[in-house]
Amino acid sequence: MKLKTLKDFESNDESVDLLLEIRQEAIKWIKSYRDNELTEHINVYGIGHKIDWIMNFFNIKREELE
Image (tube, rainbow, N blue to C red; front, side):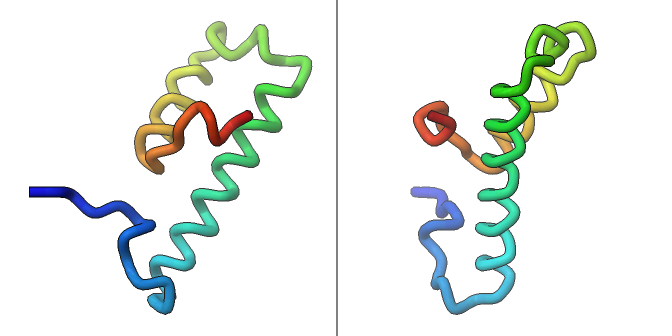
């Protein structure tokens, strides 16, 4: 059985559109945090685990962050 992702659902569904917007915001947040000069604090404060969780939750690939 193949599991569906957000991209598999109809885009006219408002909840799917909202989730896709939130996903895009998550990508922007991760990019901005990684581009910030404070990246050395990612592992010190456990933020790296939070970024990994967000990437897993929204099925964000590393290629999308480049």
